[in-house]
Length: 198
Image 1 (cartoon, rainbow, N blue to C red):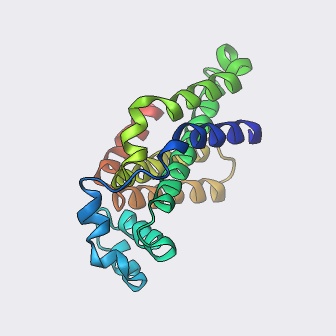
Image 2: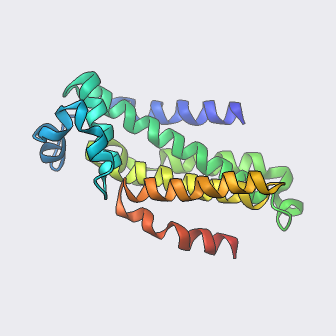
C-alpha cells in the first residue's frame, strides 16, 4: 500500500507540475485576491464555522498567512488534496474488491485493479479544472471528506468490536460535516453510503 501511495502522489505532482505558476482567474479574484477575510489569520475560527464553504475559506486563509498571494502554495495544496483523494479511491476500491462477495473473483487482482483505477482517477483530464483552478479547492476538499466518509464507513462496517465501530462511524459523521462546510455537494454522501452498502 505504501508503494501504491507513493506512485499515486508522484503521478499527481508529475501531471500537475506545470501548473505551479498558473495565475488567479475568474472566481479566484473575489474569493482570494480581493477577500479581506482570508488576509487575517484571526478570522479562521469564524470562517471555519460560518457554514457552507467555511472550511475551504479557512484553508485559503492559511495559504495567505504562509505565502501571501504567491500562487505556488495554493497549487501545492490543491495538488496535495487531489493526491490524497487518489489514495482514498485506491483504498476504497481495494477494500471493495476484498469484500466477502467479491474476494473470490477479484481478491488476487485487487491491488492492481485498485492502483490502475485510482491512477486513472488522478491523471484523467476531467480533473484538470478542479485541481488547477485555485478556487475549485471547494470541489476537491469536499471530495476528500466525501471519500473519507465512505472509507470510514467501510472500515466501520467490517470492524470487530463496538468501540472500533463507534470510532469509525463517528469519523463518518465528522467527515460528512466537514464536507458540507467545504462545499454543499457533500450533502449527498449519506445516499452514496447507503447505495454502497446496498
